[in-house]
Structure formats: C-alpha cells, structure tokens
Length: 407
Image (cartoon, rainbow, N blue to C red):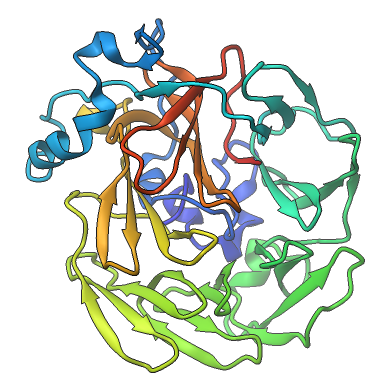
C-alpha cells in the first residue's frame, strides 16, 4: 500500500496522467512510508482541532489521563485489536517526553524549508516554482533533492546547493531514488508520456537508473509501462505491476516474484498476499528458505516496510482513512524485529493524525523519526529508538503542513 494516492493513480507508472489540475497527486514510488488507507481517503483530514497537548513535568499528554507513553502500547493494543473501526474510544494525543532532539529537517511544504526542530527557526528553499501543493524531499547522496509531483508535464526534480538554492536536474521522470541517493530510477514512456501513450496495447517502456548528469548507471532494460518503480533496496529493486511484485538484483536476476513485496533487506524479503488475510512470509535470500510471520494485532492493512539501517527492523504504517466516518484518520505504527520475529507497537500508538501529512524515516544511528500533523498537537516531530518505552517529542508551532521530510 502506498501513501495518499487516489485509487486511479495507485499505479505510479501513470504519474503524468494523475497530476492534471485539480487531481490529488500520487506519492513517489520510492517514498519511505505509506498506507493504502491514504488512497481510500482521497483527501486528507482537516487541520487539528484548537488547543495543544497537555504538558506536566516535561511529559506530553499527562493531562489527558496519565502517562500514556509507558502503557499505551499494551493497554490500547488489547482493547483495540478486536474493536477498532468507527466505534472505538478516541485515542489520546501524541505523547512522550518533551526534550531537544538536535535535528534539522527539510520539510516538503510550499515552499520546502529547512527547520531547526528545537528552535523552530527555518529558511525556505529558493529557486523553486511557487504554489506547488506536493513536494517530495529526499537525500541525493551528499545533497538534498526536491521533486515536484503536481504538474501537467509530469515530475520535475531539483537539486539543492549548500545554500539551499535549487537548480533543475536532468531527470525527466521519477520512479525512486537509487539506494545510494546518487541517481534515480525512471520509467521512460513512449511518446510524450501521456496517458494515451501509456495505455496503448503493446507499448513497451525502458527502465533506467540515471545519475545526476543524465548518464545511465547500468544498462537500461525493457519494462512494462504499468509498473510502479521502487523502492531500491540492498537486495535489489522492487517493482510492482497489476498482478505481482518483483525483487530484481543488480544483474537483473529475479530473486522474488510474489503478489506483494512488503520490504527487502540484504538477506531477507517480507511478502504477503494481496487481500492481506494470510500471515506474512519471510524469505531467506541466501538459502531460499521461507517461514511465516503472524500479522500484528491491528485490523488495518500496512503500507510498504521501511527498513532500519542495520537491516534488523521493518517499520510498517497502518491507518484508518475515515475513522468514525471522517474526517479524522488513525495512524498506527508497528516494527517487526527480523532477528526475534516479533512485533512491537510504537509508544503512543494509535493516534489521530492526517495520514497524507505524516511521514517517518530511519536515521543512520538507528533512531526512527516521525513527523507530521497530529490531532490536538498540531505539527510535531517524535523520535524513537527500538526498545525505548516512550517517544521523545517536539512541537513545530507555526509550521505549514508538509507531505514528506528528510533529516
């Protein structure tokens, strides 16, 4: 499942067709988080209600009925696992310990801007067109990049210099960032890439990995035009078509072909059926052995997995796109420990949040950063390290909504 794409745009190979004026743009195929709940939602929920989260003694959420961060995972997991839906009690707001996080984020707002999380000070990226509703921001090697998704002519990517000034890149399409961030995977379509050009029977596209100078990083190969490209993983590139997903290594050899590939590390691939009723299957890419992994105790389908830098954890986002009939939406984050084959619900989950305006990324040091728009908290950033019982949280007062971020 992916983030915020309307159903008609779920196949991101049709990106150009889905970004006509007034349409809700799809998320980039290589983006690191998401859930098909966003696709069903169509549009995000309105902004949070007035008022911030209660604080007492440096702990968020204390005035909402106790220190939720320490007990919420167990208590709410048991209460909600069989009763989630439109009738359950409203979960408390995002909770955790308020403290400095030492992070500077590039936010995918309009315009994109760098923000010091602890002080709230920021500066906007210059040299970009204004009025763009959805920017996807990402690391391009040792630089930052921003990709414009809302456009009649398709995606356009800009690279930022050290002063935060943008210049256009040679990338004409955007499927997913390369694993090392120094290029992009793109699906070149026949003709002008319009919907009519892609839809013709017999059309073939070309899958390329292109560097920042527009040169091929490896030999191009023919591909179906209805593929969604990405993410790029240590094991290889994941591509998803209407009927199946494929994990292909650097030489072009197919490692796994299944209805759905949730995540891949250097040594493992996590797959599932399309309906989402059966347990996950964990593949050992070294030996070919397979084992089943039960699903976590949440009734909602997950998005694609986001793998921690050490390859041990797979973070999955679950969501309810129209809780209690809307406009409220629920976010529920779970992490699978591949070593122990055990699920952990993150502290303070579930929460009411705008799914389209919430994102998460792993840091190189093994921490997970969650940032977005949360009910009764407004924009905020939270940090979690596996094994910690509580989140560390900082609000971002006065910041515009954003659809993605990068550290």
